[in-house]
Length: 99
Image 1 (tube, one colour):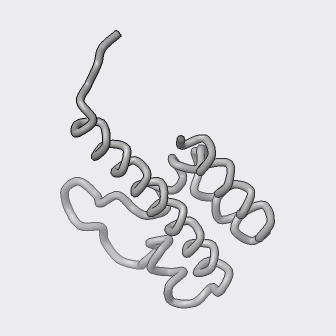
Image 2: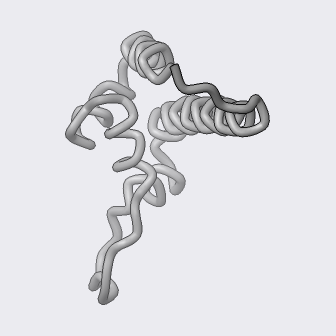
């Protein structure tokens, strides 16, 4: 059995826990913003008129949450946000599976 020092394991465990907490808070905030349907909704979904900039596109919040929640499509997330109980269940399941 491979043994490691506590100094090397402890920071990675804290980082993993921190990332899980951040993703959960992002998802909770996203549900709040999407249900309001104001300017924040436009910014979060990234649907603007005009040309895209050149080069590699930045990763969007929606794409990152889609992979974390296990849903391949952003449209599935937008539909789930409308139902508050379903959205909470999706966040809770993703948080449990991310351990």
